Image (cartoon, rainbow, N blue to C red):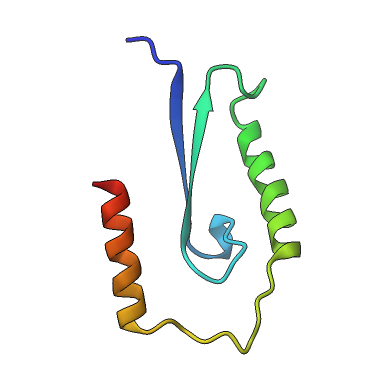
Length: 83
């Protein structure tokens, strides 16, 4: 079976897993054959992008957690997108 595109899943839960923001998250990265000379170079690319994001990300201590209702509405929106 020949595929031209692939998906790379990178779960980050905790600092030892490379977590750079204070919550569990997953990177879903589309890949294609030959996108990196060495396949493991993707990890360095992720590190660079996360450092850039962290510099832009304002982790405001005054940020309020979303309510259950807000998260429920957001989940409904995602369900529509992925159905």
